[in-house]
Length: 195
Image (cartoon, rainbow, N blue to C red):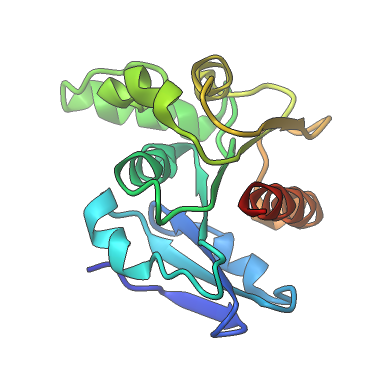
């Protein structure tokens, strides 16, 4: 089972789960959690180990927030457990051409892993089946994943694409205010679909 490595906010509020692939900076957002919400950072698992954390409280389903490297886990969870997820936010925290992107490609090539440009693999064909509201947040030079998601998420109730100008990638360290605003808008969209 997955466990949170950081938690803040109302323990009875709507749960917002930030999936990270390791030493992420999502924990920086745990300061000043909005009233009525519980935010937690969780190392990215597959969708099954995440299920125990998908707790609905007062009819409010959890929202998943993921970066480029954890997007497949968030979307896979929304597909595998559609009644347990309220919404998904994917943040392009890598960018199209960055040092991190080049390192990931080099490591994949070293191990002979396919580099499909998105990290979604077979999940890409299932994107139209995602029904929950989704927000895509990107910088001015988005990773390939963002375009793939924008064209593939045709079945979700609400698809919002937000761009942060003058940012190669959107990171909690440098764009906390923008991330909080986008997340608040996604939660409002999730609430509208609940009514």
